Image 1 (cartoon, rainbow over the protein chains, first blue to last red):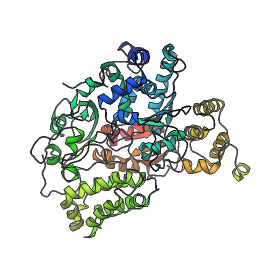
Image 2: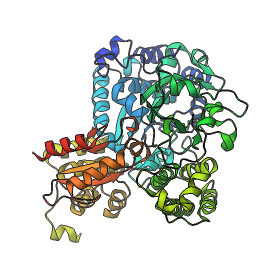
Image 3: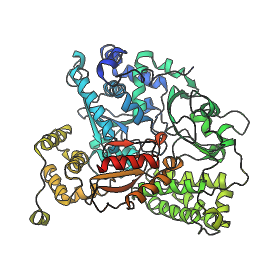
Length: 446
Length: 167
């Protein structure tokens, strides 16, 4: 029953070329949009579809579009956020590499809907080979009259530019991305004003994730209602999930939102179960920033129902027993994983990636990394667990951008659900620092 | 600028100069500073690193102050602020790659090359650089050499890659 909105043709040989993509019906959505629809009608369909931002925040895309200011004589910009850097997330990489024309088609439709004549795809610089794929595809589309001046004789002009980043997780935050696009350090901006009012070059700007923009092609063909009919409740449509860790089949899967977490992990269609001979210990469901859950809470809600792959079901129970869908970076841990070591690893990431603007994040991420390091390496103090909780709580909510929260949640949740494991490290430093040592005390393995 | 007096000037090759002009033209008039990140990549592609002289050259090209280039080059992790070896191995140290045995593989790689992260082998062939998530978590452990991704790394695979590149 899995609907393939994005990945239907991904296995067709040569699909990265214009001709093959075109043969599969590629660019007919652009033709339909530009020749038969008004920009307002496209915005309306995207609103009806209820697509939620696929980069991680989950903000409704149509609503974001409708906030775009339209002052006379001021250019508007669409910027595609392809800075995918959230640990556990590699879906945009997969989509752009295999289906560059799907993103380009979505960019043309979205730019037309928003009235943008110059749009940018900001790709993380490490993916230079993907940038070259996109540039080649753009040149092909331009040669065929789908980009450039007077597209399909409509009078609409669009220039599409692929800009490489320089290696900075923070540039996935939309205002940091805009700073970076302006040739500056990636320091997030204070909001308001929001990019919809003052974005790139202080002009009205929409920033959307790769996957979000790619959905518009299908929505133009099939309508917003058809899109909203897939999924459950406010979690409409399909979602690309990048699955990694201790599973039999890591990879990127397009699922209808609403698949039970258990099915996603165990069904052959998706992750194919935990690797042989091992048990399921913990799950990070939506990229390293979201709270980690022990296996039992990942699979089941407090009321005993199955937890589903939707924005709502994953966050059911709040942070006490729930988590978030985030970017769909699905990291599975088996019983050989040390939660303390992994939490230290994630903390080091956030410390490294903090832009340094806000002191709670700049200093706090460093403190958390140091304290976790000393626990992991057998020098933990008895008060360290509470200290970590305290530091995390003082970063959360006290920074300009969500990186602070993203750094605090993994630490706070690991302690919330795996406190005994931290305590074991502090109480048994000799044992805990043996190579490959992992806490084997009581826990709910599945 | 004193660097100009003491060091040979850096200039782009003809091809790269054409490319640099194309890149600057992507942006609206007066917003040429937007070209900074792409031009720094171009500089590094040519010189192997973002040398002070090269950064000054980029500053002149974009009509901005040299400090505006330095502060950007030092913020982003991809730019090498010091000379590097012929092959820079940028290996992912983040969670998912470590879950798949990254730490063991990287320890083997360091031992094999006799250098730690941030260092260059005596023969100038390899520089090791630890990086954060490369967006290939399902294929970990992963490292990158220039534009190429090497995935599902094992000790044997690392040896093969190093052997191949050492030829």
